Image (cartoon, helix red, strand yellow):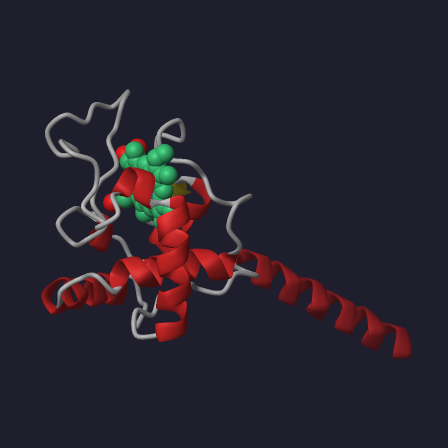
Length: 156
Ligand code: HEC
């Protein structure tokens, strides 16, 4: 009797484990980028100057000719100020593109010869901070559209 009970519990635990592994993004918390978090924005501003401005521009306006001269082999850094397409990605995609140069959510890979992967340079908190700083430069209209995009993916 007791053995059957223990065996039953083990089977249940294994089942729960399998279900957990089948859940999307198990073990990973969804990333939220909050441009109203002033501490994050201040930290992000410093990180942006040091790590991103050389390509994406001190004013977040991207590299000159990014929309006309970019080629697949030699992409130019797009603006992060709301005039490019950064705002078209949900928070998790921006995080993954910055950290790994690839995002399954945005269905795209970045050319890692021209856009460095930051996974060994910045920790997760710093990546969220620099993206909060980027978002803090967006107009109300762009922020609203980005909120809608996040909502499409089930984020608030
Ligand atoms: C050495 C130049 C360089 C640096 C430094 C750089 N980037 Fe980029 N970044 C690029 C280029 C070039 C692209 C476009 C790559 C492509 O289209 O394949 C890009 C694309 C991106 C994208 C994707 C935008 C989109 O709409 O698809 C994000 C997000 C991004 N960069 C964030 C950052 C952040 C954050 C930093 C600093 C922590 C940073 N980048 C530093 C060159 C750079």
